[in-house]
Image (cartoon, rainbow, N blue to C red; front, side):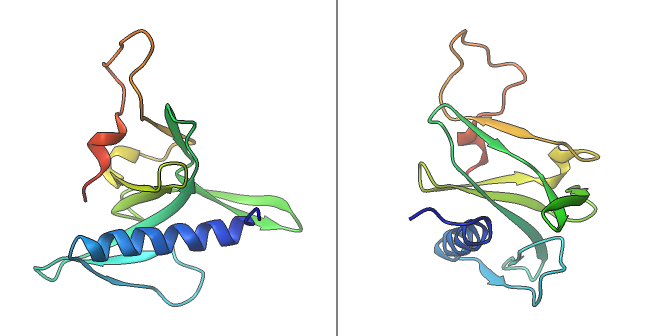
Length: 140
């Protein structure tokens, strides 16, 4: 059964929350839908960090993420909000293909971007400069 967009997002939030709990973190879930983040990470020192979660499906070579949200009205995009360090601390996503979570610091999002890619497999031409490798984003 194919999940709808909301169900995919809910599943990704559960997967990331479980991953964070397995790593020993406490998490809190904001009440309601009008937040810029989906989870609150509670560090051992009491620091709270905002985590935006996305569902992705890699092709086995690249993971493509849209670090933004779209407000819809009657099925049409009304507004696009780009995630930045002003609104979140982490962009987390669960890759349904590999059943794995990744964590990108919001500082890497700059003033906002339309898409972000992480390499799961090396490039065919062995290029490494300017490439984000997924294995570098498995810790938070």
